[in-house]
Image (cartoon, rainbow, N blue to C red; front, side, top):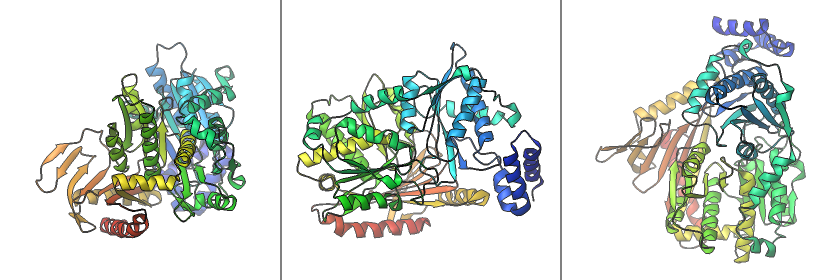
Length: 576
């Protein structure tokens, strides 16, 4: 075995670590060489958003020591940036994952030991409420302990700046630099100063839910259809603390919480993964909805920033909508309501990511509202909101991975807002004698049938990271000329900031920040994107194809054709 890995492991056995951690490492050293390598071959990378990793002992794991070291680096950076502040303040939230509360307490210890005042939520809260709290409490930074919708063995650490958004340039790289300077746990100040820690509770909840309620656009529709039957599942996560209360605030009186998934539990016992993008995670809620004759299913991930929905199709059976479909519905609803109330003045805009359906742009164009494209990641949507604050009005935005936002008081995707507006949209559809599915088909008839699919390939350990890197390098060096039988006409290499016309060979600069993303536009307008994860050994392939749509039956007859086309594209990419 690599002697450096053995030395790292032994340094933990001889260092200031608790006995349980040392016992775990001794056991692995004796029984599992590969596992020991994976735990110590590197330090858990503090990426541009923070930390995310498997829970356990070791430098490449989420544990109280890696959390403490990351917080020390963040504290050092805050003290450099805000030297003129009399008191630097931070706010910390956490979700239902294993050790989330312990990691939040450790972060509070380190902040307070460094003289930083800490607001610490007294129990689990949604990630978007943390984003709200940063600005509401005039903090300089914020942390939420969560691994979002990842499997139970993961936890993570997201960092927010004083604008309430996840960190972006230059702070992201600068914080990474400070964190990397904390080379060992002995460099961490960790003696808690209780005078600098304040537990917060309902006072922030009340302000947050009041702000969410202010986004309601159709109170009359809700009054007429307040008894719409809704099934809601928090999938054992933090959504239980805010979504039911927000739906009640909006005026909905017939909300059924799925009991089997209502209790916060980091083991997520009823699902394989607590991800509302997965059919398995939505199964129990859909079964409950069918049983009671509900009209809408809502389910949020553990930190309640993403929402999955199910609606009745033309046959009365519940069907899951993907993130692009839900995002398109939300934008269409928001723009329709803004137009009807005479609020569109020409200064409004919506935002989407480069891997999110172009149907949203088509909808925005029809309302003469600007649609801005950004890199994948909600922090880039938040960045646009910040740059335009006080000059232009953000209506809404989203990304295909089930994250949506309306309003400007939160600077991250917000499933509490999304659930409330989706329920209101359902009431609006009913007032117009339609279901949400029928509204979606109407959008397709008006703008064209856009069909999307995402394939995610995940590998494990050190070898998995290398495999993903090699897959992406090969695509960049040897881009396919055809995908699914269609010629590639434009290739956008966001890592090089270059767009190439495959026919003329002319190039043009890409003005967005550099990112490890490769995008192909095909001769029929289809768009295919390859994007490796920045925090995990994973690569995602996004496919968006389209066709004409003239009759509701087209949804069922044309879907298999588009599915076949996408599978041919993915085969050419080596993704299936």
